[in-house]
Length: 378
Length: 48
Image (tube, rainbow over all chains, first blue to last red; front, side, top):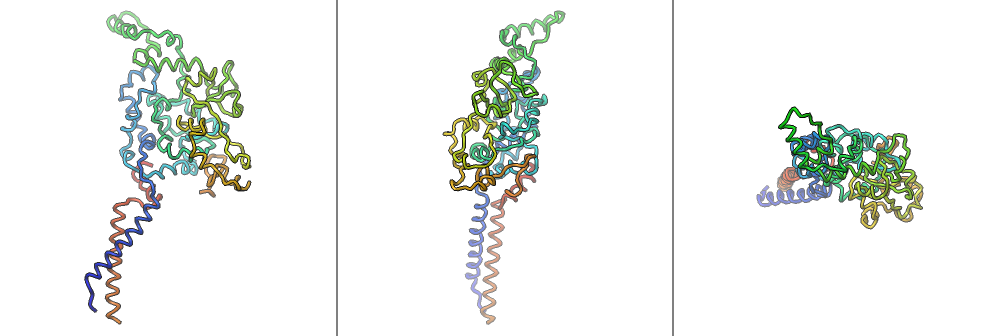
């Protein structure tokens, strides 16, 4: 009964090594991606901080004018004020699951992908009737506000943009794209004042005079003048151009006189009368012409038919009007989205039954009428 | 017979102890071993 201590140690080491490799291999296989996705979570978790930062970033004056311009909120600010945990690296798949989880639970997650013809009318309405906090936070709050999920989600676009939109889904680094133009448009428009902007010096002098001679009654500055005085000349003028060139869509869905281009303010896309999907598209803003839409930062929506569209029996779906301009560009230029082509591709011999079961590509399913996910596909 | 069994069990125990040690170390190095665990982690931290 002689026990060799070296053999005992050897057995211990072998047990350690084998278990280590097995477990680590399993862990690595199950948790393949360890890259930080803090940007997206910043927008989701640091919402309260964003509003505070907007106020603290010198926007008080602009907010007092009743008109806040997007570029005033720097993306860095948003990142810095985010939840401290969000800055730490987290697992990518946690983000990837967001959409599916939200669909299943019927959560009030902002849907970054919407179908033009099936989007619930309540979604843009909420965006338009945003609270003043939304104005102060320059759109970042808008994304985190509980907004009804659009009734349709284009899984193609979601998966196709997976690599690039981990953060972009919830947070667009370009602040201008976070602004919902419609709330700017809804404001009473002092167009004349903006078209003939009073020089900054004059505005300041007027204020000085008012301060020096309190008995002189000075009318409060119009919004546009206040913006000019606050150094927001460029952005304010751009907003004025938008006001003149676009109108919010009437509630009855009719087209306003003289406006021929449909715009989707959520997706920042526009459709021309000659587009195939023009009739089906839901507009929440109308432009006078294409150039006006482009000036407002909208991109032309062009549906790219799937290669195997003829083989599908699924209902027609308008694909990928999405929030992020990067994504929109991918939809406009099919060459720029090779990933989408790869992911949505269904084998050529796919039967009609398979096409119905997975209309958006392998593993996809048609959402239920209430927007929730298909249990079977989970 | 006993002379064979006892050392065998001792070596086996050493193997098991080594395995448990490795499990503990891995658990410390990798906070989550599955998506479910990591999501639960996120929820606990208040991120998700």
